[in-house]
Amino acid sequence: MYSDLNKKVAVVTGGSKGLGTAIAKRLSKEGASVVINYHSDQAGAENAKKDIEAMGGKAVAVQADVGTEEGVGKLLKAAVDNFGGLDIWVNDAGVENKVNTHEMPLADWQKVINVNLTGVFLGSKAALAYFVENNHKGCIINISSVHERIPWPTFAHYAASKGGVGMFTKTIAMEYADKGIRVNNIGPGAINTPINAKKFADPEQLKRTTDMVPMKTIGEPEDVAAVAAWLASDESKYVTGITLYVDGGMTLYPSFEGGNG
Ligand code: NAD
View 1: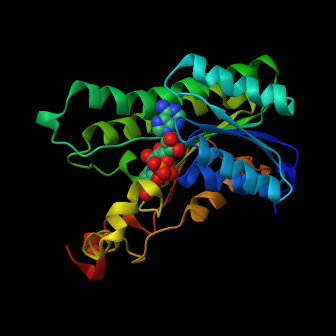
View 2: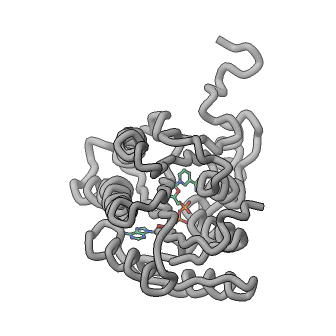
């Protein structure tokens, strides 16, 4: 569908499952070669690689912690060594855990901020350095969240990390716009991935979630991947610094539905 993605090279962090796998597969379907990053789930990343190869695509699975400079350096090197360069960097890796803020161990705060925010900074820094050095108009896509905008009690570290990703993205989009480098966020709502598997397996919890979605349904990873492909392609060549919410309307204040308020 997006012929300009053919032969492009993408790095997808957190690619061993969930949204990362769906994005890696979709970019591959468009003809891109993909570095699939995993942290601990090697089998998940190898399966994604096999699926991509079975469809005729090219991929490598690379272990790396996105919260370290060494980790993101490994991913960039894998893109250059295996596929000859870098065009698209997707910061997808993310973690969360539920805990009251007054009881939150500092270690929980640091872990979530380190993966979700510092990881986005380090990944973006590596990609930007490559693009600037090579005078290349690449793009960066960050997987943020509706919690870039909506507060989330008992997930304060997560909401803070995604809010930070929002302003970080706007800032670097402006900083590198004159070089033709585009940086955008996708803000998923409630999507059917392993992070939510337990919650959505419980009919009551699933209903509580879908009640917060004007479209009354949860999304699929492919809904997010489709937007990632568009943002990576030249079809969005005049789009930078935005957060595109993929949320069935969750950010539209659903409590006003039916004319309430
Ligand atoms: P997931 O748990 O299925 O996948 C997260 C991935 O991140 C995993 O592959 C995990 O191994 C990887 N990861 C964690 N720490 C890492 C590290 N230090 N280095 C490298 N990789 C690491 O979750 P998902 O639902 O696919 O979420 C992907 C992204 O989308 C996350 O940033 C998440 O916050 C965001 N998001 C998801 C939803 C949703 O409903 N699923 C909604 C909003 C935002």
